Length: 128
Image (cartoon, rainbow, N blue to C red; front, side, top):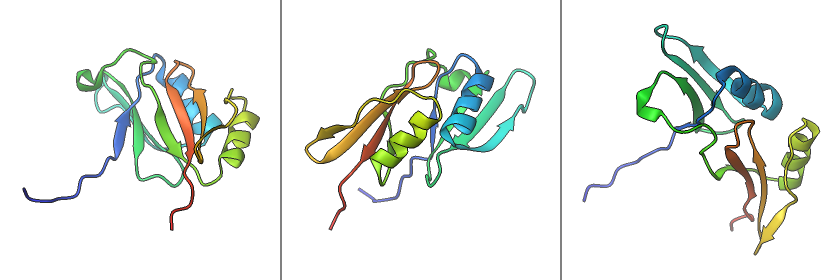
């Protein structure tokens, strides 16, 4: 078998209202809006990237290849260096975030977007 690199760079997030979701991810959570385009009238693509990430999310309309029920995405992880700082920042922006859950030294906190897609903040211990 020939070895080669594969990079996860785009994850579709199913939402019912692209403008509301774009505002949540960009204005509330702090993702960067990479682009918001309508290549033809029936299609809209909004790509956003979390700060410091090489992977983006896409909110799409009129894209049958990525259609999913709104709010059906579960457990997408955002890895952060300090979960308390990240949690407090998101709480301070009006988003409900769970208490920190310590699972053997790996820390987790959970929140949802307006459609009910679930997200996880994760802090992994420093690696040697």
